Image (cartoon, rainbow, N blue to C red):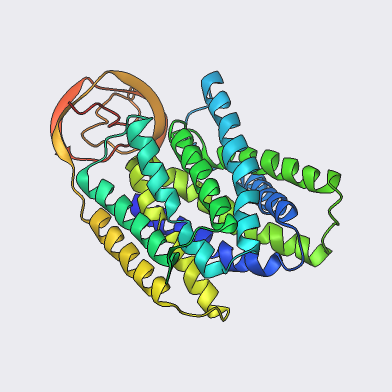
Length: 342
């Protein structure tokens, strides 16, 4: 299920590149960034309002979590989207879509070097193969070509990579609330900046299309991606999410953009990198220290606890204690396996 969440999130986000390209003909990048995130925030706010009786999706946000969420909103919601859309407005949708592969490379590097997440050899190789795909995409007869548009997209990918790793730290909180706050705040800031800079308001139809696209490609996609990170970690979830550019490139081709040799090579490299990730296995003897948290669970090896005489249907959600426990089994860096690797 976590892998499926990551792949559906990738498809929803990847298709936003060619569709946003169409909207950029009639609206500025900054204004569109605001509309996309406002659409995501409003959609998930309404979802939380209507779905009042849904199961609890995670623990409440602590003061430290709120500071992390503020950083997520800044780097991933306010700064990155205008950069991506600025680059998209100046390059083909297929090229921009596949350049988004750089996000998985930056996410893996930050996860391993800065945030202490264990990266197996397959993850490292897959990230390198994704980077080769980006090089193949920009290769010309004179060698790799780096344009200002490509540089803007690459910087957006770096900011989103930081966003991914920060979001991983609060992924066991309510994903609907996280994305609602991110969407409403970032969308309002970018929309206000667009208005203050004198950019004209788009037509009502364009506003509606931009917000609808944001609800699916940013709102729903981000929620599914956060759920995937809970169980896979930032690097692995990000690597599965790297299939998003493939969907974006396919959408660009459907809109009439040319099929190039670089596009074919990049797509083949992406497929190989994804295969490496699907077949990754990580297992060793490890310890679980005593801890307490709240999330939906079943009574598996990690959740053997008492309920004070109450036994509800599974999966269920309530505050519970885990550990101490020592065992060995295949696992990923989820909320129960955030341990060191000597």
